[in-house]
View 1 (cartoon, rainbow, N blue to C red):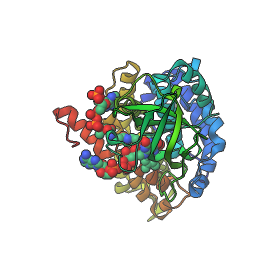
View 2 (view 1 turned 60 degrees about the vertical axis):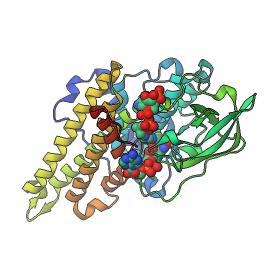
View 3 (view 1 turned 180 degrees about the vertical axis):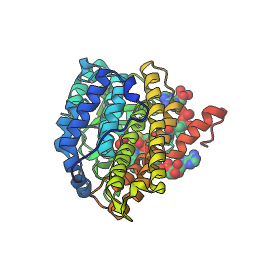
View 4 (view 1 turned 30 degrees about the vertical axis):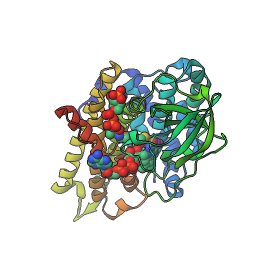
Length: 392
Ligand code: TGC
Ligand code: FAD
């Protein structure tokens, strides 16, 4: 990408409702990302390699465990600040936000929420500083939207558990130091286990050939009679509700992140339309271009306010799973549509890596699928408003 010329857009004055701390954290994240990540992200994407050199910087801007208490190494920030950090990360690349989402909401959060004090002290400070990277294993080759059907299982062998099975599509898995793995015990009850790199029988091969989220590494988790120490079971909560609670937190972060990707596409399209001359005028002077831009900023603004409100509710401990589903589903779909319109405004240039549009568009195809597909979120909403589950 050429120089990052991004300017933020706040059509309805949302900034007036943010605290000084929220704006400061967001602006510092934006500044660091512009300087350190924007210049390297296109190459990382083309090489299909997560840029490991940004890990200390991500930790420094509070991207790892923003809302985890400071006593465990987290940043102790509120939910809106967490969302704003995710927005800034995804403004640059969904894969960078993915790495932070997994580390924060799918690894640190379950250890903080369901872990013992020993587990918290052992893992959280190192995960917050980026000294350790984690991953989250819920999805299996035959169980994606329906995780309750999982077959990964463990049996009690007296002084340890014996873990068998496989997980698929796991962000960060090939280089993760610790995996939060969801598996069934002998009664079929789901529990979280902390599986560490190097345990005998545990491998994490990379999945190649992705055309989306290329700057984030994705892999499998394979367990072949892995002996897991008993102290590695998360004691605080069992059942599918435990991983689903983690997903609430990650999906909320994604709702903010998608706004970031949309803002970047809109910003680039607005600037391009003012600079590109056709028929002796900037293309921004044509009504059809103005329609596209006006609709883009309208949808972005609606998403900003929906998501901010859910942030307020989360700060008060009142946001529901369904409200989060509404925001994740709406915002990712909105961002994809904005990316497609922005691509049109850029004409032929829109398909090149001179502009971030195609990268955002391809990334968002993963984002609309992971953490619950677009249709699964619709069914979650449908169940809430009718009282009738239509999953099965
Ligand atoms: P269901 O019978 O509805 O619920 C099972 C139990 O869970 C409870 N529950 C929740 N608890 C806490 N928080 C929530 N959000 C909860 N939702 C449900 C529920 O009360 C019940 O408890 P109990 O005590 O009665 O047993 O479950 P179901 O099997 O019918 O499935 C429901 C469904 C389809 C909505 C759910 O399974 C689902 O959300 N599926 C989508 C799967 C998904 O999102 N996977 C994401 C994998 S992780 C990922 O994609 C990371 S990407 C990382 C990146 O950013 O890079
Ligand atoms: P399926 O569940 O097979 O769905 C296929 C299609 O069928 C979808 O359109 C879906 O909406 C539809 N469908 C399924 N059930 C129904 C129904 N009841 N009614 C109507 N339509 C239905 N998982 C993790 O655990 N950890 C990770 O870190 C992680 N990272 C990921 C990173 C990437 C890049 C990707 C692509 C995925 C990742 N995932 C991860 C997995 C992700 O959560 C799953 O891909 C997602 O939940 C969908 O599962 P599936 O791919 O098996 O699709």
